Length: 441
Image 1 (cartoon, rainbow, N blue to C red):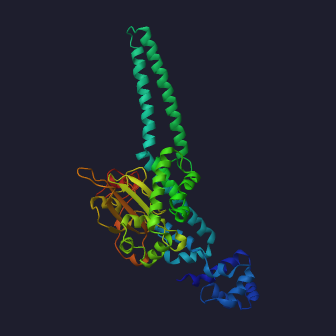
Image 2 (image 1 turned 90 degrees about the vertical axis):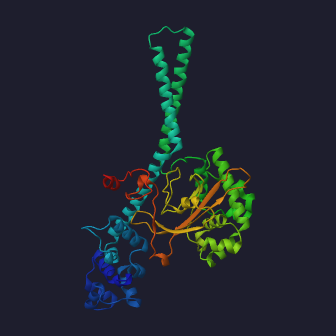
Image 3 (image 1 turned 45 degrees about the horizontal axis):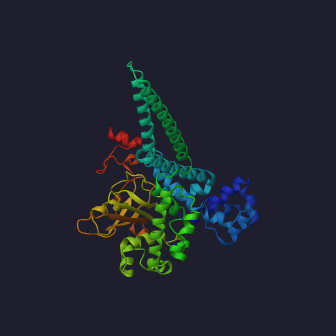
């Protein structure tokens, strides 16, 4: 039933909440109690002057009664129902608006819980990615193990019962002291790192992630560089609190220089208008402007949504499949540290250099929308006789348009460790999710 047809239910709930009798509200609105009874049971449509009179009597804005629950709350309730799946307690989706209209408090609570689950799932994905592929964590643990092994070996020599020259004993004692100091420093660094990554915003894993954080914090769009070109790079770097290391600053400079070069070839005003004309199709835009497809994709990911462009994620990887740039979507953020699902078009493009790819993809969660992804792989830099050929793959992805709703989507994941699809031919390792573990048994 359309949303507006539940106005009567909302009137009834607000009247009961305020302790008004049906006859009292009918009198204030200038109608009979029997007619109000029909309205409250959604047997008569209501709008215009009468709706305003009833809203005034209840002390409410008429829109609260006519529009009911916000679309965001309804969407969250539908996601919650999809997350729960089918079963004895399957939700009555055809009555979701009635439920939200009659019980706005409960509807808001369920919507908030669904959003909390999304946040928790994102944190699990991030923690799993860090634990499995974090180079800084691996390096810190290696330092600790190395120091412990060295101390054990040296102490074993000193307690072996053999005569040891005094000079050698002094050297061994010095080695134990130095290794113990190294162990203490490594342990403290490890504790600090774990404390930081346990915070709301994790510490960057690498210089690449620092540069990603700079771009992501600005929504992929840098108006200073759009206006001033490369001359604005130093100002952007100076204001970037995301950059905490010299290496991160160097990588960010390279990213900003590429952004400035892209903006110089494809100015925002002209490209923005053309993107709307071409339905944001990167291949059509590449032909229209006569520029390489990767450059068009990077520019599409930099277009500001407030100008009517879709929110677009960007992922770039080298020939080894390692992400060198990532501006994620909230619906899908590939693991930054490695171990991403190989079924994404980004990685497929590596095996098909020069071939543009277009694919509809869907993550395993029942609440995830279908995504439209474009990808291409091109040689990076110049080539020469006998020189190795290096490649770079670029992918953009965004929410699929409504006219593609009936098309079959490719099943993809984020990483094997958190993907419940146990029958996937590309699986590298078992999933940590309970459902997948049970299915594997």
